Image (cartoon, rainbow, N blue to C red):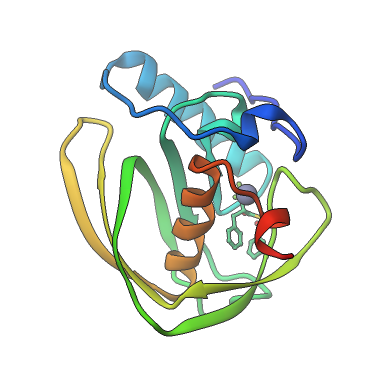
Length: 156
Ligand SMILES: O=C(CSC(=O)[C@H](Cc1ccccc1)CC(F)(F)F)c1ccccc1
Ligand SMILES: [Zn+2]
């Protein structure tokens, strides 16, 4: 798939509330494939639709061990559509985050250690999961993007 240009912080698309996905069609699947290719090309572990100039409530999260999170699980990319965070742990954890829309910068961000989430897959089927540690961090980071929130707002 073609690589999509990544929006940089300051662009309006990154400040908007995303729009719920209603049509689980071939166009959605194509967008997800292009996002996945763009994330991989940028060596990211997540990417949200607004970052590729799409206003839809959709992101991709993956995970792999890296220098900051050496014990992170290897997780194949998961497509997350119309996500909700149902429950958050009171435990907060500080950790380093980057963002493809804020290139070359790292921020120390506090996130909930564990979260309960519901979302739809590319077929529109509802999934429910409990996420913890690095995966929960990525989910919260991408979920922020769908609310128009970037690391710059979180790291004040
Ligand atoms: O690959 C990155 C680059 S930043 C990245 O992958 C963002 C996802 C992310 C990385 C680290 C913590 C939380 C979210 C992707 C974004 F910007 F589209 F959301 C990375 C950064 C820190 C730790 C491990 C990996
Ligand atoms: Zn980001």
